[in-house]
Structure formats: structure tokens, C-alpha cells
Amino acid sequence: MKKSFYRSTAAVLAAGICTAALAGCTTGDAGLSKGTKSLTEGYETAAADTGATLEESFRESYADFALRLFQKSYDSEQNTMISPYSVMMALAMAANGAQGETLAQMERVLGGETALEDLSGQLSLLKSRMPDGEGGRLLTANSIWYRSNDDNFEPREDFLSYNAKHYGAEIFAAEFDGDTLDDINRWVSEHTDGMIGDILDRIPDDALMYLINAVAFDAEWEDAYETNQIHDAQFSGADGTVTTVPMMYSEENGYLKEEHASGFIKPYREGYRFVALLPEEGMELGDYISQMSGETFLETIANADNIAVEAGLPKFEAETKLELSKLLAALGMADAFDEENADFSGMGSCKDGSNIYISRVIHQTHISVDELGTKAGAATAVEMVGEAAMLETEQVILDRPFVYAIVENESNLPVFIGAVDAIGE
Image (tube, rainbow, N blue to C red; front, side, top):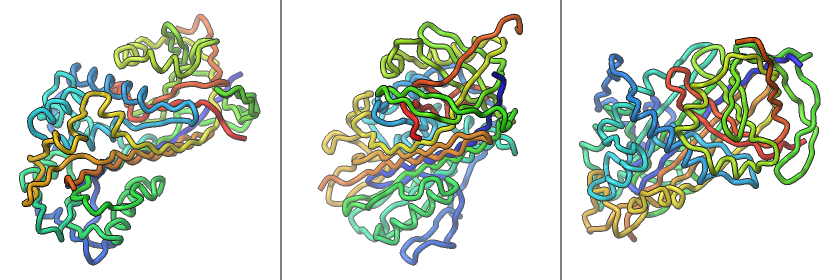
């Protein structure tokens, strides 16, 4: 049962905040509506310290955040995928405007024992070290959009300049009308290769700023699948439904084994690997996900056995759209979403005394896996508003619900993590 498979992925994360929007890439005034002005050229961008190293404490806190967010967002009714990399990038930019207990909660959720300043440095370093070659490419873009036609609200210049400098965020002043909605959605689409088209459905009257992060991933398998490696197979969904799917078979050399699952690693041509974990027979996917941890995830990948694996990966395609505010509050950063207790005074202020808080965190993803590779996209919008060895052979065939992730090779940190419960005809 030897076969091989290829995939490419893209993700976008858009974070909208009552007073800021985060995303990153360069657009300029070209293509913007009349009411939107790019201020990016007026801000300095600092290069990442390439001599620095990713701290083990950061790797642990990142993996922990990724798995906890995945557990909270998992929905057995749909195939779920998130980009913890994108969500963390957007929320960290927002946290640069937080103060007091709001900041403390966001630091604990995002960085564990890592202070925000150090977290910003580590995220900047991780971003700069993401491989970007022909066979494996991940592009990250950040931007901030603030309401320019509101005499009541004034963004803090040091907040804008810090995010521009350390996150490469583009800065846009906009009227927050229907044209601005089109500008933001177009920006996200451009920076996700068209995979995420409409991250925002509306701009509320009390929205002051959007923080937007967009991520696009595209990679080819190190060994692409040939036609004779693809055969129809039965996939048993979580609800008991059995469907016929194209199964892509290959022999891999990275076997994964932990207490309740086995799996395999499938390398891309450059910089990234596809990780698949199949829960043991009789264990529901939701039960398996609920007992996962960042520590175990990293250990499982680090302890991969170099033995042959007869692997089967189904072609699949999935889209996810989530509103994450309640999930993030449950993780421990409730004050950020509380109109009375939130403290984002470092982001800006309203002359009438209205408080600024996060209203929505919208996260949208798309993934398509086939014999050539994977194409995926993700977007998250944080919207803030004002108050108003080859001696043995293993076999892992993904013919029932499974967990997957795309990890960066050096750090083993997941850029995307998802679950497949069912596959349509």
C-alpha cells in the first residue's frame, strides 16, 4: 500500500478591535477607497533579531495556547481548523494596548509566564524564521485600521508605532463606512490568496479600530502522490455515516505513537511537515481532543520513530468560521471582553469617557488537501468597540475521524491544527 501525497495551505487571521484592526502586508493607497488613507510610510519597521533563539518557555506556552484554543473551538458537527499562529499574532498586537488586569490576563493566556514584551519579540522572531521557499511558503501580514472621522476617538501614537515597528503592521485611517468594509475584506483576500474573501460582514457604528493578521500557507509534498497511489476507500464519519473517498497512500518514515493515538509525519518540500494523529479504536474524536495538551503534542512529534509507516490520507476540504470571544474569555482573559472592566487605555481613548473593549473575535479558515498538496486560508478579526529504523512497519490509515496539524520544522509549533469528522461525497 505504498502511495504518496501533496498538500498546500493558506490561512488568514483578521482581528478587529473597537479601536484597531490587525493585519500585515503592504498595500499602499492603490486600490483603496477615497475615504481610506494609508499611513504606513510614516512608521518605522524594525528587523527581527535573527541572532536570537526561540525560548523553550515560549514554545511551551504557544503549544499550550494552541491546544487549549483548539479544544474550546472543536465542534463535532463540522470539520474544524484554526490557526493559533494567526490568533496569537492578532491578540498580541491588541494586548500592546492593554493595561492593568486586562493586560495581565492576556499575558497569562497568550504567553503563560512570558511577559508581553518578550512574547512580542518571540513572535517577531518566529515570523521572521518561517520558511519561505518554492516548496513550502508561509506569508504573514498585519495591519491596523482606525476610524478617522470620529472626533471622539483618538488612537495613541505609541500604540500604532509599536505595532508597526515590531509586527510590521500597516496603518490605515478610514471612515468605517461601506467602502471601508470593502477595503478591509479586499486586503484580507489579497493576503490570503483569495481563500478568505469576507472576514467582516459589517462594521458596527461603535467600532473604532480593527487589528488584522493574515496568513497564507502553500506547500508541496516532498513526494507528491502518483495516480496509482490514489484509490477509493471507505471513511467512517463521527456520526456513523460511511462515505467513499479518494484515499492517498504512501510509505512514510516518521511514525507517531502516544497513549491514545498513532500517526505519521508527511514532509513538505521545504520547512514544514504535515502531522496526523488517529485516535485508538473505540475512542471518540472529541474525547481524544479533550485530553490533548501542548506538552504531549510537542513530545509526540519530538519522539517520532524512524520506522516505515504505510500511511493513508483522504482528500478533503473544509471551511470553519468561529466567533471566539466567549472561548477566549473562558481561557482566562474575560476582562478584555467586559465593557466595564476592560482596560485598553494604551490603545487610545474616547473624549466622552466611553470605555474600549473587544466586541468580537472572528476567525475563519479554509483548507483543501489533495494529491498535489494543500491550500488553506485563515482569518481572524478582533473587533473592539466603545461602550455605547526500518526493521518494522506500522500502518496508519485515516479512514475515520482524525486530528491533523501543519508544523514548522525547527520549532515543531503548529501553524494550523484541525480535525476531520466527516468527508462529503
